[in-house]
Image (tube, rainbow, N blue to C red; front, side):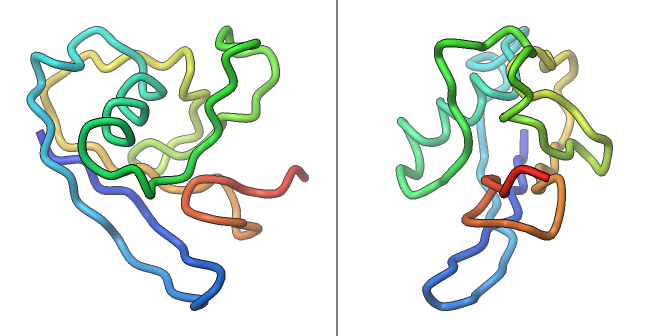
Length: 103
């Protein structure tokens, strides 16, 4: 499956879309947060996102983002189908990649 992630580098004020290829069998039934952890640990360690081990139950809402242009909480949203995914920050107050300032 193809995973597109909106990226942002604050030092260079550069925005782009990064594409990753992930074997669906490695992430089937896992959450979007698990997918991001997989990408970060196995493919691209420069990817920035909120990973909060103390919550991970959809309570703190720090990991909220857009999945195919719909708002989701990434730690509780499961990957149900072998389909392309586009992840983007929730708003335009992006600090880096999928990390945004709180509103």
